[in-house]
Length: 149
Image (cartoon, rainbow, N blue to C red; front, side):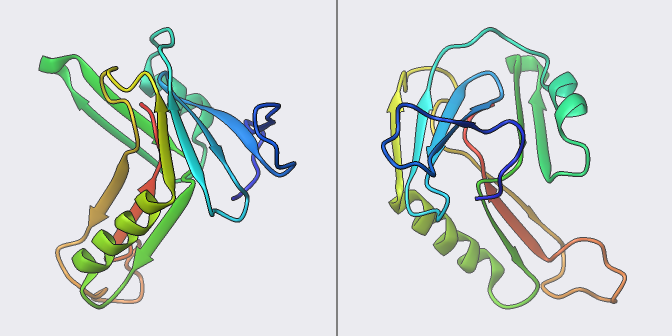
């Protein structure tokens, strides 16, 4: 797991490499640095403006934003815990297998009745399975896991 300035040592986790980090306005996550276990804990927190948070925190990190104004719902995510990039092959099936493997090592606890509680995977897929030229900026598929909103 990449270390960043928003990760703090957790007294709640017995392994010294564990970190506890705030993710948006909803979830805390606890994970081993080797990625073997991810614990997503959903807690109610005060509302924040997700675009303002992304503006302050994202810089050049991978990030995701989705909004549904009619439902008054917005999701902002940055700094993936785990990430997959694909440029060829059956990228949809590979993405599904990746998500399933991450969920197998994820434990979800807390107030799971909260809106958007629990794990979320953010995906992007290009129209084409392989890049059409070397200068293409985006991989054919990207999947990253980040809990919270």
